[in-house]
Length: 156
Image 1 (tube, rainbow, N blue to C red):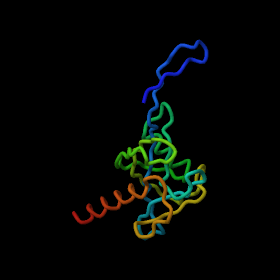
Image 2: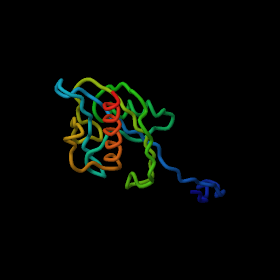
Image 3: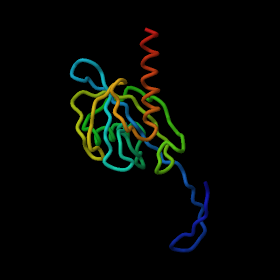
Image 4: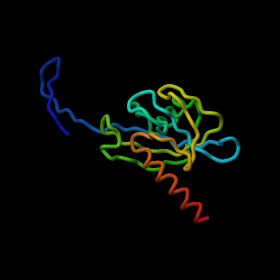
């Protein structure tokens, strides 16, 4: 979307483009009590409140991979190893605040996650005990993730 603004210094007309913001989300697989693998979700301190995958905005000059590793560390205290890029989600309504495009990564980590930065609380969940109140389009992302895992398990 293009609009014209004026330079605050000289008054020259400048084209200004309103673009979607790139973000990353990370599905972090961790060992839960040595029994099964679970995924890490954070309970957000900021609006919109609720449970979410760790993630956030890509900083200028930063790669998607660097942003994913940084956001995971900032929000959970975990050092993650990125396994692969999972999918990109771009529905303009995925974030109620503004249009974001999120590239989702699957990562692995060892250790105990801690609520840090924007996280009020952190938990390890599986498909059968996901918390109520998951925000953004993260229910869809998690559904896609668990469906893919089930397909791979069936395929052998």
